[in-house]
Image (tube, rainbow, N blue to C red):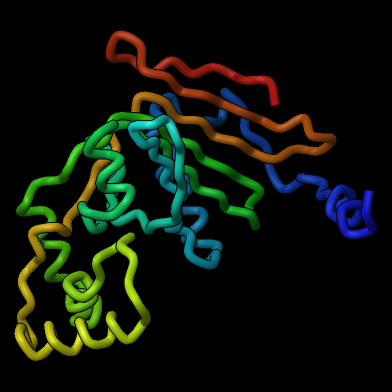
Length: 215
């Protein structure tokens, strides 16, 4: 083993900030998520709204990327993107995904799985209009996940669409929201000696079943 590999292998941390107990957790996973999410916001963590989205292509090859959660309620977890992007194309062919929040400073992870659907055009329109102007122009300028010759292509596209739409760019037809409708949640709290707390919620006959998993 090289010195560099040995240094990596020796990286360790003892998790001792908190615990996750069945008696202190919510019976509804959405309420538990809301509680942890609000704690992450209150702790002023760097980008507490960042989450990893995992999708699977038709050939079975998985891929991940980081996006920002833009809403959650009883219907599910919402984010916005280019529908023609890699994730958009993969979700069109296989409408299931997994999400993960990792709040390092709180020693917590939330994992969410379920079916994905597009949000309504009205929801996408409303959120699009709330974005800064540069971001709205950027949605037109970027052919997300497509090969381009250089950054100059993006800059030129932004200038062209900025001149075309001025202060009122409409929502591009290829851009909008996705909603993951959860059927499985997992809440992970780091604990000492790698005896971590893991509570899983799974949907069974319309009811949430909470169970503890071995770390």
